[in-house]
Amino acid sequence: MMIIKTLVSVFFLSTIFVSAQGAEKIYYPRPEASVDSRNEYPVELLQLVFKKAGGVYELVPNKVVMPQLRSIKELQNNHGDIDVMWTMTSKSRESLLRPIRIPIDKGLIGWRIALVTEPNKDLFKNVTSAADLSKFSAGQGYGWPDVDILRANHIQVVDSSTYTGLFNMLSNKRFAFLPRSLDEIWPELKQYQAQGLAADQYLALHYPAASYYFVNKKNAKLAANIEKGLNLAIADGSFERLFRQYFEDGIKRADLKNRIVIELTNPLMSDETPLARKELWFFPK
Image (cartoon, rainbow, N blue to C red; front, side, top):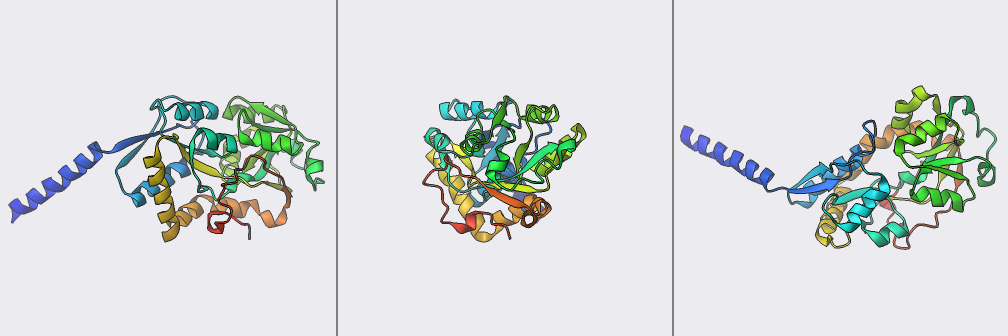
């Protein structure tokens, strides 16, 4: 009996070892800074997605820190440095890469609260419209879709070549405010509050937007597996549970019902955006 148990254990461990050895490595862009926590949710969701879809994958951050535009270029060129990335979508990005058109953030990327400097925490006290907002300059990352969205809404934008540079530029009053999404602002405020930053308490900006997983145009297999896993996770509720685990407290803290919501247009959204699938999107209560 002991021999049988030993053989079963050896077989089980061997199976695990073979599975791990046989896992396909999937490379994704590493965070742009050591204090950048924006990858945590997309990575955990992708692990859930692969578990639901089946197959054996190992998620691995790529070796070199890259700004967003370079990551897109690397994925487009298919050199093997990046297999999947997550980023805000636009018609241009969907033409370069293969999008999996399920918003992994339920559209939170389009719900924005402004970071301002502490002395300017009442900057928007009397702002009630996009026309009022256009009197102030906003900061954004170079090449981010938000740059064109804000400019299309007549808001002046100052861009930064690096993610961390945005917070330094705001502290140094290079621009008046830094609009951050509901899934970004609170960890960033915690990280950069010591630099004299604060969250505006008066406004929320909203424009239709989504963050997708993207793969190379030719990687239909990986795209199909991700889409399958996402739909299975949505169907069994595990997607929603993970979303709430990460963002429910931040959504409550935003207190949207007590803010003036300024609606902006997004001319970069594709006609193929799944707006009709209401279960995919966040709606304030």
